Amino acid sequence: MARSLRTSAVGSLAAAVPVVAMDTADQSAAATLDLDTLLSLAQGGDEKAFGQLVARFERMVHGLIFRQTRDAALSEDLAQDVFMRLWQVLPAFTTAAALASWLKTVSVNAVISHWRQVDSQRRRIEAMAQAFPGQGSSGPVARLIEEEDRDQVRAALDMLPADLRSILTLRIYEELSYEELAEMLALEVGTVRSRLFRARQMIKETLERWRQQDERHFRQSGSNDAAS
Image 1 (tube, rainbow, N blue to C red):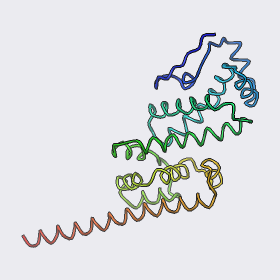
Image 2 (cartoon, rainbow, N blue to C red; image 1 turned 90 degrees about the vertical axis):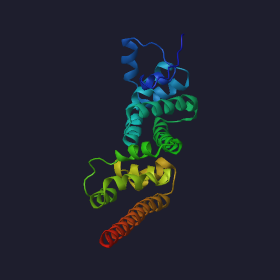
Image 3 (spheres, rainbow, N blue to C red; image 1 turned 120 degrees about the vertical axis):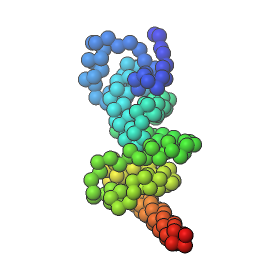
Image 4 (tube, rainbow, N blue to C red; image 1 turned 30 degrees about the horizontal axis):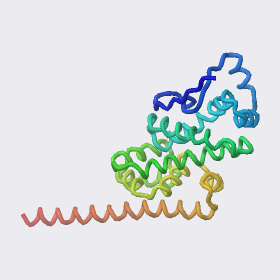
Protein backbone atom coordinates (compact mmCIF):
# COMPACT_ATOMS: atom_id res chain seq x y z
CA MET A 1 0.00 0.00 0.00
CA ALA A 2 1.47 3.28 -1.08
CA ARG A 3 2.09 5.73 1.74
CA SER A 4 2.94 9.42 1.64
CA LEU A 5 3.96 11.97 4.24
CA ARG A 6 3.10 15.50 3.28
CA THR A 7 4.06 18.37 5.57
CA SER A 8 3.27 21.51 3.57
CA ALA A 9 1.95 24.28 5.80
CA VAL A 10 -0.75 25.03 3.25
CA GLY A 11 -2.00 21.45 3.04
CA SER A 12 -4.74 20.00 5.17
CA LEU A 13 -3.92 18.88 8.68
CA ALA A 14 -4.71 15.31 7.78
CA ALA A 15 -1.90 15.50 5.22
CA ALA A 16 0.63 15.80 8.03
CA VAL A 17 0.37 12.09 8.79
CA PRO A 18 0.55 8.91 6.72
CA VAL A 19 -2.51 8.79 4.49
CA VAL A 20 -4.12 6.44 2.01
CA ALA A 21 -6.85 7.01 -0.52
CA MET A 22 -10.36 6.49 0.88
CA ASP A 23 -13.35 5.92 -1.35
CA THR A 24 -16.79 7.23 -0.42
CA ALA A 25 -17.89 3.94 1.14
CA ASP A 26 -14.77 3.81 3.33
CA GLN A 27 -15.29 7.39 4.47
CA SER A 28 -18.94 6.81 5.33
CA ALA A 29 -18.16 3.65 7.28
CA ALA A 30 -15.30 5.25 9.21
CA ALA A 31 -17.38 8.32 10.00
CA THR A 32 -19.90 6.20 11.90
CA LEU A 33 -17.33 4.63 14.22
CA ASP A 34 -16.94 5.94 17.76
CA LEU A 35 -13.62 7.47 18.78
CA ASP A 36 -12.49 4.58 20.97
CA THR A 37 -13.05 2.15 18.09
CA LEU A 38 -11.13 4.40 15.70
CA LEU A 39 -8.30 4.63 18.21
CA SER A 40 -8.13 0.86 18.56
CA LEU A 41 -8.11 0.38 14.79
CA ALA A 42 -5.46 3.06 14.31
CA GLN A 43 -3.26 1.49 16.96
CA GLY A 44 -3.54 -1.75 15.00
CA GLY A 45 -2.07 -0.06 11.94
CA ASP A 46 -5.27 1.04 10.18
CA GLU A 47 -4.22 4.30 8.53
CA LYS A 48 -7.75 5.06 7.37
CA ALA A 49 -8.89 4.98 10.99
CA PHE A 50 -6.02 7.26 11.95
CA GLY A 51 -7.01 9.68 9.21
CA GLN A 52 -10.50 9.76 10.67
CA LEU A 53 -9.08 10.46 14.14
CA VAL A 54 -7.20 13.42 12.73
CA ALA A 55 -10.33 14.63 10.94
CA ARG A 56 -12.35 14.39 14.16
CA PHE A 57 -9.82 16.34 16.24
CA GLU A 58 -8.24 18.76 13.78
CA ARG A 59 -10.84 21.49 14.30
CA MET A 60 -10.28 21.40 18.06
CA VAL A 61 -6.49 21.47 17.75
CA HIS A 62 -6.35 24.12 15.05
CA GLY A 63 -8.91 26.27 16.84
CA LEU A 64 -7.08 26.10 20.16
CA ILE A 65 -3.79 27.10 18.54
CA PHE A 66 -5.32 29.78 16.33
CA ARG A 67 -7.11 31.47 19.22
CA GLN A 68 -3.75 31.89 20.90
CA THR A 69 -1.69 32.94 17.88
CA ARG A 70 -4.27 34.62 15.59
CA ASP A 71 -2.08 33.47 12.69
CA ALA A 72 -3.69 30.99 10.30
CA ALA A 73 -0.50 29.81 8.60
CA LEU A 74 1.35 29.42 11.89
CA SER A 75 -1.61 27.59 13.40
CA GLU A 76 -1.66 25.17 10.47
CA ASP A 77 2.04 24.50 10.85
CA LEU A 78 1.91 23.96 14.62
CA ALA A 79 -1.18 21.76 14.32
CA GLN A 80 0.62 19.56 11.82
CA ASP A 81 3.46 19.17 14.29
CA VAL A 82 0.96 18.11 16.96
CA PHE A 83 -0.54 15.41 14.74
CA MET A 84 2.90 14.21 13.69
CA ARG A 85 3.69 13.70 17.37
CA LEU A 86 0.36 11.95 17.87
CA TRP A 87 1.23 9.41 15.18
CA GLN A 88 4.49 8.68 16.98
CA VAL A 89 2.95 8.14 20.43
CA LEU A 90 -0.39 6.63 19.39
CA PRO A 91 0.13 3.25 21.12
CA ALA A 92 0.32 4.96 24.52
CA PHE A 93 -3.37 5.88 24.72
CA THR A 94 -5.96 3.63 26.32
CA THR A 95 -9.02 5.81 25.59
CA ALA A 96 -10.02 8.52 23.16
CA ALA A 97 -10.65 10.82 26.14
CA ALA A 98 -7.01 10.48 27.16
CA LEU A 99 -5.98 11.20 23.58
CA ALA A 100 -8.12 14.35 23.49
CA SER A 101 -6.63 15.60 26.75
CA TRP A 102 -3.13 14.96 25.41
CA LEU A 103 -3.90 16.85 22.21
CA LYS A 104 -5.04 19.91 24.17
CA THR A 105 -1.95 19.90 26.34
CA VAL A 106 0.46 19.41 23.45
CA SER A 107 -1.30 22.12 21.42
CA VAL A 108 -0.82 24.61 24.25
CA ASN A 109 2.80 23.57 24.70
CA ALA A 110 3.43 23.93 20.97
CA VAL A 111 2.36 27.57 21.17
CA ILE A 112 4.46 28.18 24.28
CA SER A 113 7.48 26.65 22.56
CA HIS A 114 6.94 28.83 19.51
CA TRP A 115 6.70 31.97 21.60
CA ARG A 116 9.95 31.10 23.30
CA GLN A 117 11.68 30.66 19.96
CA VAL A 118 10.48 33.84 18.32
CA ASP A 119 13.29 36.37 18.10
CA SER A 120 11.33 39.40 16.94
CA GLN A 121 9.50 41.29 19.68
CA ARG A 122 7.16 42.77 17.09
CA ARG A 123 5.92 39.35 16.05
CA ARG A 124 5.36 38.32 19.65
CA ILE A 125 3.38 41.48 20.38
CA GLU A 126 1.26 41.04 17.26
CA ALA A 127 0.50 37.45 18.25
CA MET A 128 -0.73 38.55 21.66
CA ALA A 129 -2.49 41.66 20.35
CA GLN A 130 -5.23 39.50 18.86
CA ALA A 131 -5.60 37.20 21.84
CA PHE A 132 -8.40 39.04 23.59
CA PRO A 133 -10.95 40.38 21.06
CA GLY A 134 -14.55 40.81 22.14
CA GLN A 135 -14.08 39.72 25.73
CA GLY A 136 -16.49 42.24 27.23
CA SER A 137 -15.82 44.10 30.46
CA SER A 138 -15.84 41.33 33.06
CA GLY A 139 -12.36 39.84 32.77
CA PRO A 140 -9.20 41.25 34.32
CA VAL A 141 -7.46 41.84 31.01
CA ALA A 142 -10.58 43.46 29.55
CA ARG A 143 -10.68 45.86 32.50
CA LEU A 144 -7.02 46.68 31.99
CA ILE A 145 -7.63 47.41 28.33
CA GLU A 146 -10.40 49.82 29.29
CA GLU A 147 -8.06 51.65 31.67
CA GLU A 148 -4.79 51.68 29.76
CA ASP A 149 -3.56 52.28 26.25
CA ARG A 150 -4.02 49.09 24.22
CA ASP A 151 -0.52 49.18 22.78
CA GLN A 152 0.99 49.30 26.26
CA VAL A 153 -1.15 46.37 27.34
CA ARG A 154 0.07 44.40 24.33
CA ALA A 155 3.66 45.14 25.24
CA ALA A 156 3.07 44.25 28.90
CA LEU A 157 1.51 40.92 27.88
CA ASP A 158 4.47 40.23 25.65
CA MET A 159 6.85 40.70 28.56
CA LEU A 160 5.22 37.93 30.60
CA PRO A 161 7.10 34.62 30.78
CA ALA A 162 5.71 32.18 28.24
CA ASP A 163 4.03 29.95 30.82
CA LEU A 164 2.22 32.90 32.45
CA ARG A 165 1.26 34.40 29.09
CA SER A 166 -0.22 31.12 27.90
CA ILE A 167 -2.21 30.37 31.04
CA LEU A 168 -3.67 33.89 31.07
CA THR A 169 -4.62 33.58 27.40
CA LEU A 170 -6.38 30.28 28.04
CA ARG A 171 -8.18 31.64 31.10
CA ILE A 172 -9.49 34.73 29.31
CA TYR A 173 -9.98 33.60 25.73
CA GLU A 174 -10.91 29.94 26.19
CA GLU A 175 -12.79 30.75 29.43
CA LEU A 176 -11.37 27.64 31.04
CA SER A 177 -11.97 27.02 34.73
CA TYR A 178 -9.11 26.61 37.18
CA GLU A 179 -9.79 22.87 37.20
CA GLU A 180 -9.72 22.64 33.39
CA LEU A 181 -6.48 24.61 33.24
CA ALA A 182 -4.96 22.36 35.88
CA GLU A 183 -5.88 19.23 33.91
CA MET A 184 -4.69 20.63 30.59
CA LEU A 185 -1.36 21.89 31.91
CA ALA A 186 -0.77 19.06 34.40
CA LEU A 187 -0.68 21.48 37.34
CA GLU A 188 -2.26 21.68 40.75
CA VAL A 189 -5.27 24.00 40.98
CA GLY A 190 -3.38 26.08 43.53
CA THR A 191 -0.52 26.50 41.06
CA VAL A 192 -2.96 27.66 38.39
CA ARG A 193 -4.39 30.28 40.73
CA SER A 194 -0.91 31.42 41.71
CA ARG A 195 0.27 31.78 38.11
CA LEU A 196 -2.82 33.69 37.07
CA PHE A 197 -2.38 36.05 40.01
CA ARG A 198 1.28 36.60 39.15
CA ALA A 199 0.45 37.22 35.48
CA ARG A 200 -2.16 39.85 36.31
CA GLN A 201 0.05 41.45 38.96
CA MET A 202 3.02 41.65 36.60
CA ILE A 203 0.89 43.35 33.95
CA LYS A 204 -0.43 45.89 36.45
CA GLU A 205 3.05 46.61 37.81
CA THR A 206 4.49 47.05 34.33
CA LEU A 207 1.72 49.42 33.29
CA GLU A 208 2.10 51.42 36.52
CA ARG A 209 5.85 51.70 36.00
CA TRP A 210 5.35 52.96 32.47
CA ARG A 211 2.69 55.43 33.65
CA GLN A 212 5.09 56.90 36.19
CA GLN A 213 7.81 57.14 33.57
CA ASP A 214 5.42 59.00 31.27
CA GLU A 215 4.48 61.41 34.05
CA ARG A 216 8.13 62.16 34.82
CA HIS A 217 8.82 62.71 31.15
CA PHE A 218 5.80 65.02 30.88
CA ARG A 219 6.87 67.08 33.91
CA GLN A 220 10.42 67.31 32.63
CA SER A 221 9.21 68.46 29.23
CA GLY A 222 7.01 71.09 30.88
CA SER A 223 9.92 72.40 32.94
CA ASN A 224 12.12 72.65 29.88
CA ASP A 225 9.43 74.54 27.98
CA ALA A 226 8.97 77.00 30.86
CA ALA A 227 12.70 77.60 31.12
CA SER A 228 12.96 78.43 27.45
